[in-house]
Length: 397
Image 1 (cartoon, rainbow, N blue to C red):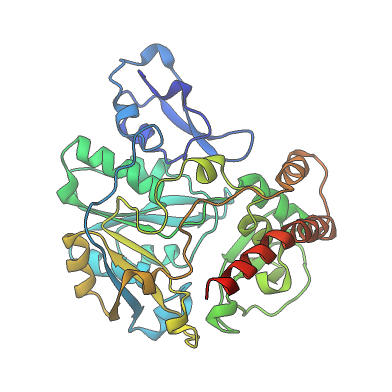
Image 2: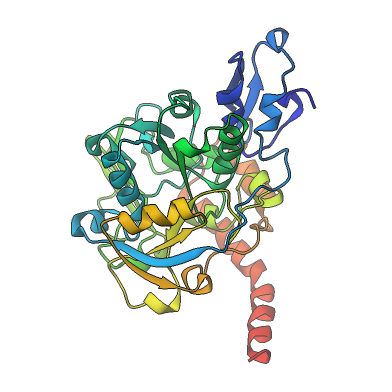
């Protein structure tokens, strides 16, 4: 393969665009709302194939071949822990490495473009925009373009983004300048879902604040959506953790997974995840190309903790050395304890996924009731499979 021209429905990591010596590759959203690379000036391609060499989608799996060291962890700074999705570890990694002269390439939400994007933080004030989870695919274009591979960086991203980035810095022999951080990843939902969701709830312009997680009702009920825009939406409690909180100039929207939030149910129910996440992901559970992996520690060991606990895994000695320097409480556990509840296999496609895609591609703005009917129908179809699993667990005791 000479270049990435024939690669479609890939991870959309954008590392090929960074690596291209002619800078003729752009990252664009495809018809299903996922990023993929496009060669914009094919006549300028010099057939070096570097774009293919760094592509984790096209290559065999490349993971760190070391036994991981695993921790339950949380920031000792109460404000950082409170404002994070779990234990505040991602922010603490960035803060620690800023003090050591590193720059931090991480993700923020761009309110003008209404997309998450990678950017480079050079101080703690700039790093603050990265706090909290963003359950959407990020545009890596500007963030990766701003990296000078001869300087020192922490780069955080999805496992596939980091896998390609590892291939890139290994290709140019600059691994020693980088610390790579990924996370336990479900997959990414379509940007069509996010855009349709904002239109459905009437918040499709001039958003000023979004939080995908809030801990007011406790960390274990933290999946809640809250949105503020210019128009006045239904006023709801700002605090609740899968809690999506979205703020604009004159309005506010809040919705929790535990109360049937449509975005979270369609995303976590695998109605509209990236095909590459479901068919081609090589980085679930203990498979990673990163120095460090982070995530929520959902297991039984900390089920009574409502302040938030991070899963923290070091795959390299470099990663473990960084971890020991952070302003965090660390409790070492076997990997199986730290990763309890995390996905071991790729997500499967929902039975009614094809209907969801038709609704997403339709110019019609469906009501929340329409979407909830689809979600309920899917849950009914899933009942026999769940019953079989439950019987199997009982018999295996």
